[in-house]
Length: 108
Image (cartoon, rainbow, N blue to C red):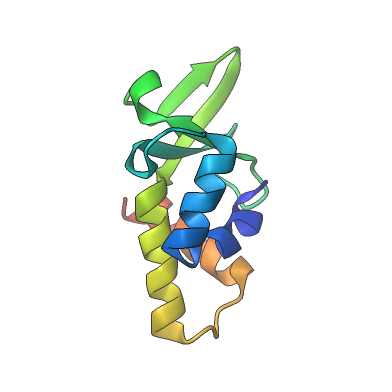
């Protein structure tokens, strides 16, 4: 799943919690970190990682693969939900994904 494909799951807390349980069953929602494989890009693969089992670093290497932190899942979900409320569904999933990445690169 890439960042664009993840956006529909972040539009509500219920959907975000559900997708979190698919990837990390039995891990608390607030402990899920979103990382992207290789680099921050719209087409980068998103992985769900347990914050308690990884180093607290922006970039990590697991099994020889480099990952870069996107956001904690709860934060990404809150941001996407706010975009949806503010723009009344006028933004496409692609536009929301671009805004997330822009925020991560420029402000986070």
